Image (cartoon, rainbow over all chains, first blue to last red; front, side):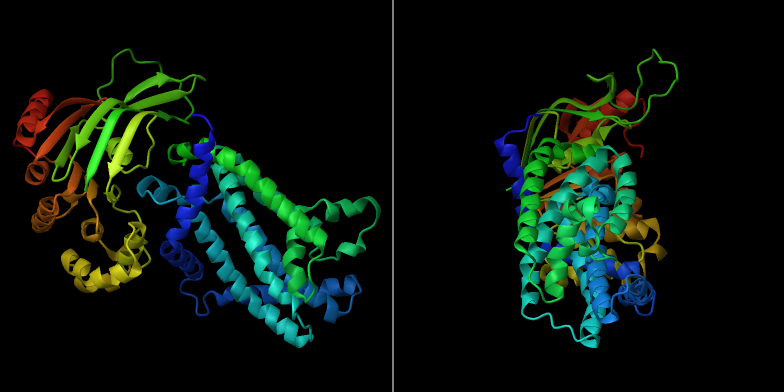
Length: 267
Length: 254
């Protein structure tokens, strides 16, 4: 089994073919959102409620510790945390993209990107439910996100492009080496605290700036957080995000091309 | 136009299980594929061994063989779920596999919802499914049970629903693994009629089963698999005789 050009084209073809099955993954993604809160009376609005609860508690505590005015800290926290929940889910569910759909992979020959699009779609829906809190905060504190909020669309596209390669790569490795699946949640928990979500990027100095400057999560958080708060992400943020996208795809395509045929045996 | 062409297929499974300390038995085992050591000392199961087979429109093939002879693996190769280690697979036409009854069925959803989930997995559109849902419901004869969650169903009822969906999909090739046998006599008869009309439309059917009666009723060709190789092939009645003789049982049993 050798990696050659045609194998890599197969990967891109799979990425494209998955798109044709959107009726399937849209249905499955929406069902995933619903079934998580089955038999509860407010259903997916539990997402909204738990975000609101988190922001109220953490906001009033940390806003005081950080001695920032609430009108500034709460919008920063709600946007940053909402985006983090989204990115975190893309990574954690991405690693399970194949393991979690093992039965389907053994039973039905649909393009495997279907399972990735399903999780992207599901988390976009959850982001939608969470954005009710964002809208409430924006109105309450009089933050005007216009006109920069339009930049959210290209920013989301970029995040989705990264979501695909992350799931292809982590999903593939996790199928073969399940220890990765145990490690990633730990790494992500740490990443949450070292990424400027609860705190501000400009509040670190000296050597500690590496947690901002060399933290890929910072750039992706900022990419979505800035438009939500009405600023345009800086050129550096765009450049790093696009660079990570290019490198990520460049690494993933040959690796996935080489091992994709084995997935059905390993799941 | 339905076509399945397998040329010299060999399929080896890497086995990820830890090796047991059980002493190596010298006797060759009667069941399962062929076990051997791979390059890196890893265990490898050779499930299919240089197997060639060509099926065309109107063929209804029965797969016979002992447990672990490679029947299900062969169906999965035909469904393009398992890429073979060596050899070439050519499949023309749309394929609907029905390999696992539980698949694509969500136990907490109603039977009616499950028609949509499984149907979408099999490549139907929602619009199509809306048109066909009534026909599927009627064929399954589940009536009001379709509005209840699947977990209230018996295994026979699940089989009925799964079978009804798969045979109503617009497909050229239907792959069935040991499923029809779960239904009661009345359903078997119905399934039989459905599959016969399926075959009349020059479609292709491959069915693995241990029930000679089901195979005789539904199929016109048969192959016997043994340790991943084709041991015999030909018209269904002859092959069943051969198989029964080799197993030391009466062909009319079961």
